[in-house]
Length: 218
View 1 (cartoon, rainbow, N blue to C red):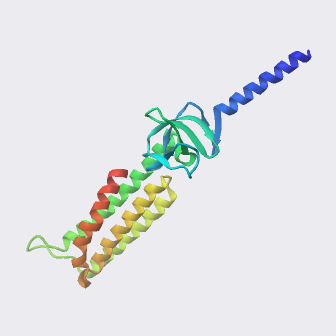
View 2: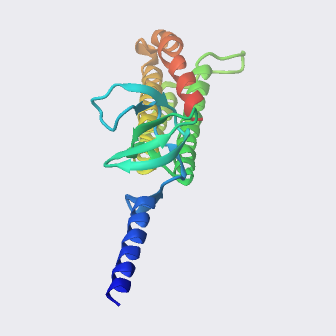
View 3: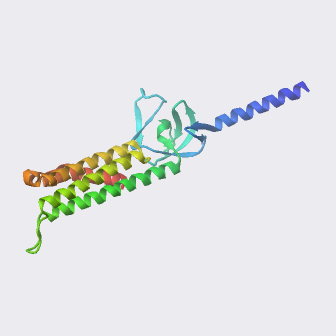
């Protein structure tokens, strides 16, 4: 009877050990060994050891798949698509559903900024009438439109803070929104040097970043 009891205790211990090896808690959800997860940041460092003091050997982009081999503290031991087994911080590994949620939020915010920018460009173009029957907006109307644009940018900023997405994406879109606000300020001060500043800033400062950020997150 004693031998049987010892055997039962050993079996229970084995099952508990296996269960702990198969699943780890990340936040409020469990992650499982052998399951595919995804990188949730942009240009995430991959390291040979679970330590930030160890130089990174590669970077992985948002949405790249990895297979979880184990968890060591705050680090995920993962198998990369090329077969390497390396380490990445657990903050940047999550499920496909989380990746899709972040991607959706990023795309939605980027499209909102696109619409604001399109309206800013239309206002700028209206400053150069295209025919004898057309007139540029009066200063009061132009400034009122610019105030409305700034209000929309403020709403977008709140949306970015309240929506789940990778920090790098949020910062990129916020920085791009700040560049749109510079264009708006040039329109507000059109008669006081804004007209001369708008196009050079648009070409040299705004457009390269708009294309880069749009390509990443739209």
